[in-house]
Image 1: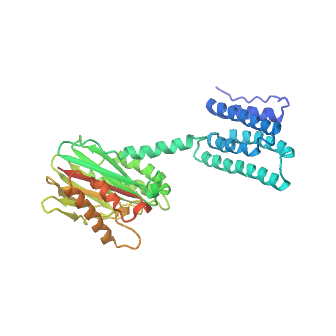
Image 2: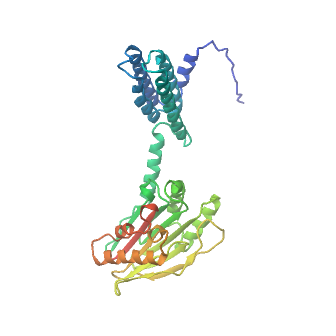
Image 3: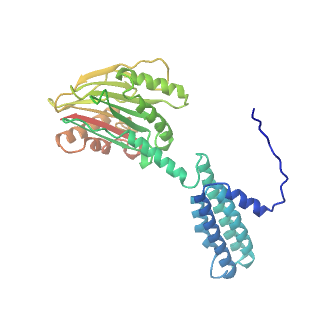
Length: 370
């Protein structure tokens, strides 16, 4: 039998400074403690310089240090350092040059800057990281979404390309794509998804869904992909967690394909014989995440030599003040011109002419049977 025993020991009196040092020393990894110690020594040196040469070393020289420490230190270390700096600033007030108003404004500005950087550091605590680790985490998450959209190698006779652009150049996009070779490498499956919101607002939802939907590729029959995706999204219970999606399954041996559509803009198919694009309007189902138990029909066809299939997000054809038909015609015109000029990127051409411009997320995937 094991027994938990708590031992209460009488503590010896400790000063506030000793408690502060002990708390900081046990708070974080060695790297953070080293950075804190270096910055504390630099702060002390600046304060001593201001005390020794108040007319030559202005108190404003502490501002870069306050900013730098706010970016690099976790919140607990930062508060400790700012206590040191605050004491130093208070000690220099009697010897500062200038009028009383100028002194008050300068000291107030320094304390306001420290308060602002504490707020910035506190925002990192919300994601469970400290210092620059939070930014590194978001970079890793963004790169993970990008890796899931990387197109696998295709057999001879097939070329594919994709492009995803976030609204206003932000690091996260509400549009994302997952792709993989399935069924022993004989099929290519691609899902293009547009979650509600855009940019950073949709970044976390994009990350969660890209991992889940990427795992579904090849694990289910093509007909069951959107059904499973819808069930997963409904279970999340997001207030605004709906998404549109289009799923493509292409047999790389025969050129046969099937497309499932969940509230997404209709895919288009290029016919090399006529040199025109046809809109595949049939088979569109409801958006994902709204209701349970819905089914999604699929459109079937075959890509012959020279044919192409393209899927895209609504940011390509939608914009305020313009009709959807106009946006679709504009997209198909750019795609046709790129197809005629062999070697030109169809995906880049389509994204570049998008009606929404930089104001919306844009994504496109094109596969050509050469």
